Each structure stands twice: as C-alpha cells, then as structure tokens.
Image (cartoon, rainbow, N blue to C red; front, top):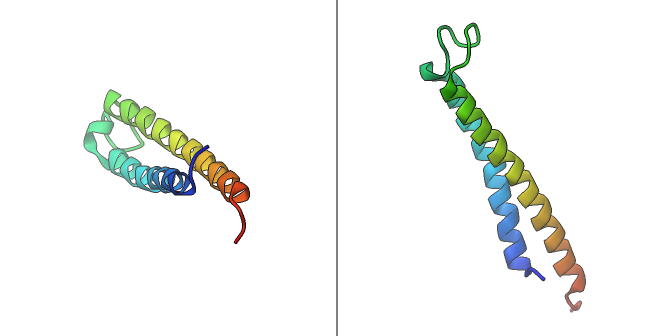
Length: 83
C-alpha cells in the first residue's frame, strides 16, 4: 500500500509533467531546427519527430502517474482510521 504522502508526491510529479511539457513543445515547434523551411509550411525534420515522441511519452506517463497517485491517495484515505 502506498502512503498518502507518496500518493501526493505521485500526483504532483504527474501534474508537473502535464504542465511543463506543453511549454517545451511550443519551444520545439518554434525552433528552426524542427523544420526544413518555414514553420508549419515545410516538412518536419528529425529534430521535431524525436522531441514529439519524447513530449507525447512524458505527458502520457504524467497522466498515468496522476491517475495512479489519485487512486492511491483515495485508497489510503479510505483505509486510514477516522479521527
């Protein structure tokens, strides 16, 4: 069983990923290395695709960690004796 403290840490870590990575995605899209020419008007380069995979993976894992943390927190709260 995960403690409430550990569950809260999971939720915070997951939310961090969910909120930080979109800002990084914006920076990647605006980077000249991501495109062969004009942004969004030319072919994406490997730089773009590598970072896209990293961002999608990190955000997916972030959502999973939030869900696991929230469920663990709820379970820990329900199993602890009421005062």
